[in-house]
Length: 433
Image (cartoon, rainbow, N blue to C red; front, top):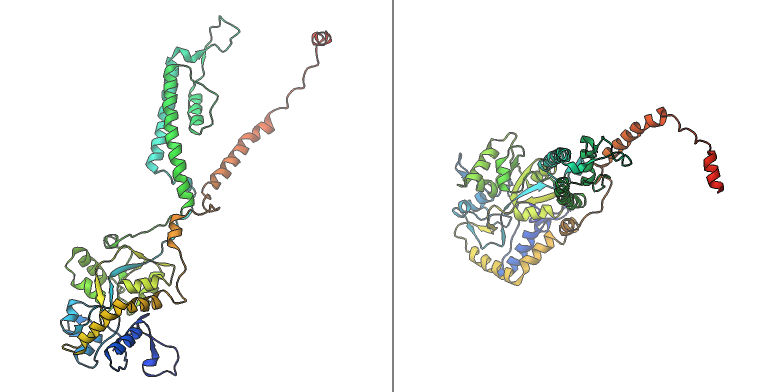
């Protein structure tokens, strides 16, 4: 007895095949090896209700493969059938031929879109506010200290030694201009002369050195490394939110795990799944994977099937680690004489590496494996494209447009410069001499 489930048991497309030749997959190959080791003949049949076997607390009855074995309509079941306490109490299992756990299947998050002010991403909004506050404070401090210091007052007419007029180069506008120029590493043509104003300028230079260096270093990472938006990172994140629904396979051991769990977080997840409308329980793994690909759905499934799905679709990924640890085993009716013999055969196949060879054959060596290199994607920087620095372009275009408008009145309104005066006689005589 078995159930159709890729890549464990699959029905071939050739309609002319009959009997055991109709089936292929990991479990079919494993069954051939075990039959050769133990020495028995077999006929493969699919379970009528397409269920592995779950105990219904309302009817107090089992369904699926478990019921078929309990009523001895099959001698053994070879499928991706999880060993658990409830099933073990009514049927027998061999030694596990594969170890696994429950994982979270999710759609690969999309890259962060380029926004208008994406150049501000390297620093948090709080840092930008602190920089703005420091800019205003230092500008006013420089203005006030320059007013009180006699060394910042100068005679605007050096040729008139007795002039009663003095001026201060650090007006309000010049103070802001000096701070702006030094912040952008361009200078301003203004140089503080007093010790107090030089100390203020030096502190500001050191502050801008740290800020600009940190911004430049972080900007390189933001522009060259692909960053993904991941709404959930582990099972705790999944349990604490309600925007992304999640579910599991109907009539499987994963559903039983959440239903019977005594752990608070899993009980919370079971209450969410049980009350969700429409239902989050799917009839097949293919249906669950399809819902994940459609977006905003997390599928709780066994890790072996999860690995199989992820390796064949680059849009799928695993979130977090495994929720538990268990194994697949071959099921037999209670008291079956075949159980111990098959267990010994499984142990021998594991020691010889046959089961690993079969796993590689059906998981890794097929032609539909997704070709992606996650390590290179994470460790190597990507070349900059237009979309990476697109957030800077609108501001540059607007500033250029504003500058053109600001300069236009000078071009239109300003009169042409007067012609140079004719050379004087004095200049001529001096030139002649």
